[in-house]
Image (cartoon, rainbow over all chains, first blue to last red; front, side, top):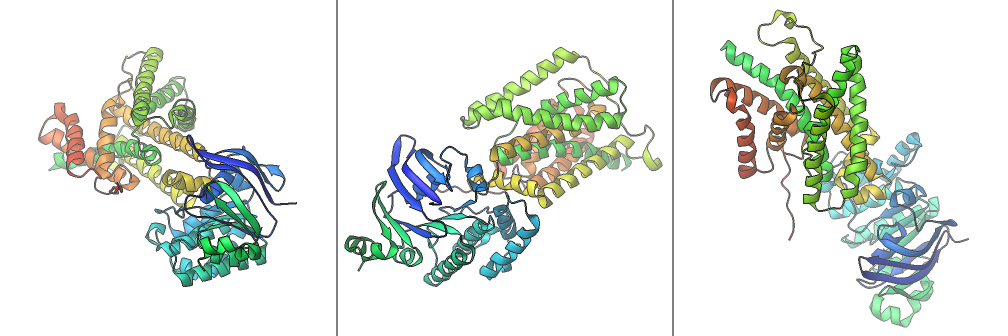
Length: 236
Length: 290
């Protein structure tokens, strides 16, 4: 059974409808990429899954309908969102940011171990653990956002443009870590990316979204082979 | 010289009370960017609860430790019932609600207890502690109580997961929801804490200014000045501002402008801070991209 099943999902900001009924699914343990140009509705799709915008349609997570739940309750099901703009708590320290990621967990003792684990993935964050998070560089804040999501021990991670504003070398490193997390801990991921080439390398499955509708879906290999995608999004 | 020392120390004692109330203002300001004008009346109402308990024969400290949680519950209830419906309303609407709260609490108290001035007991001994010549026991006690409240708050916000969650919710509500913090409840909790701190301030100031429904009017002004001087989004600054305002008020009142114009000190401070340095001594300067 699919871990995430979305049917006829519509979302609007005020009067303006941004998603016009999209359907997609996500298999447990898989990485799915959501591709598309600026303004296509990728970020809104992620926000809709967490109920941060007004939505209609059906969203099922592990069989449970979550389309009517509050954001705070969706987190408790194990869905971690790495938001657009990184969502850093700028006046708190790096370590406080990370601890907040584990806010809903009850296993306090294991949280300490997970803190060490994410410091292992991103040694830079350990160096900056007592520093105000707002003073971190953009790349460090992106690592922090990913790490904060990992602190939940999520079953599903929603990643909004994880490569945004990062140096190419850092992007590669970050994607390696995401792949490792996916394989070692079977965390499923839904990745929104403008960097289509990187995302297709990482993902098993991909959807192409244009002006609020899904126009193409398939395995990452198929999508990469599609002529239109290659011309419009991969640029060769 | 003796007189000056006496005034400074007395100023520290009342300053501690202003500091507590200023802290209550800051707590709600941080979460909502609004100044709760009803903070003083909430404290006054809580002090009447304490008076009722003491009047019924309860020992002072028992009444004290019953009043603080009662004020907490009252604060949470006010947030849930009165403030929550106007959560997304324009600023002016919320300010009107605050003023309505102030008037309602004031009138209801007057209706229940009448406007007759009552004495409120001090838990501290009548004769000065350690035979000192400068401060009454109540003044020393009030400073002590203020410092204990401050220390407890510091520990709560710095070292407990709930305190951390409250800071996170105040700072970045969207991100806070994304880690599972129930932001609405954190706000209510903030109101409860502010009300509890206010109750302590009310019980400490009542033996000095006596108990009547209008007792907190002046105190709220001083607290407001204190919060502004320290920087309205900085708890440490508010405390510093409280002690500063207390000392200034006493020293200027005794030697320069006379007791009648004391309250003007607070008003002048408010105006000067807003004109010269709106962020106060320790506040953050907010820069907005336009």
